[in-house]
Amino acid sequence: MNRVSKVIFIILLLTCCFTISSAQIEGLIIDKTKTKIGRDFYELFYIALEPIMTTDITFDLTVEEFVDPQFGSRIFVSINENLIYQNFVSSRLDDIEEKVKEASEVVKYFIFNWKEYEKYLEEEGKIR
Image (cartoon, rainbow, N blue to C red; front, side, top):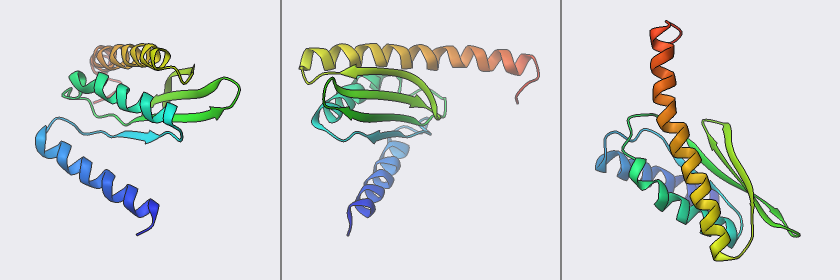
């Protein structure tokens, strides 16, 4: 089984597990990191987002990394293909933890304010 098939299988398996354990989760958290810096960021970021994983909002969250040998890695966090956070992350653990805290706060703010914005759009008749 090639690498892509394994990744797809794992994603499908994790999606099924999350759907069974919590019926409210309807989105994915996609890992597109390439290095240890990105993997550490993703793992800590995932742990930081666990408290809001039970929201009733459907979203796909993507963590993407572009490697820059001079500065470390550039991390991008997107929700439904909308870029909401980007920053350079060095290999130091305290820097990774600081950037995870920043990114998780931005994501939480976006998600909780999206509910209010969605209510506003519904009241105005813009969406159903």
